[in-house]
Picture (cartoon, helix red, strand yellow):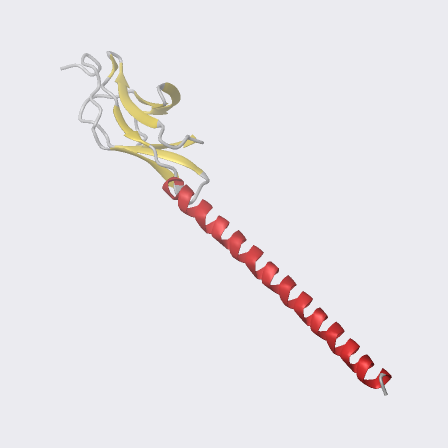
Length: 141
């Protein structure tokens, strides 16, 4: 069989994730058994990047959380079936938890400030009451 007479086969193992070495999303895929001239990566149905046949990964830049990321092997006969994953941004599932923690911390800070203010007012009233009691005691003789 001559190379490129059949549509390229795309392996089903594909991943998209955040690369800690670089602040961007990277897609990774396996080499198919068929002849390939390039790989096309789409994000949310739109072509994002085209990579040489030798590549098995590539930077995609910013990708929205829950976006569908797909790779398809391409040769002279056309593109093969896409292999897709849903990209999950790091920490995206923890937004309600983060909001709760921040809200709780702000509430605690507000409560501490209110307690401090009330203590200062109480001390001031005690001092004023103590001064007026002393003045009454010394002035009344």
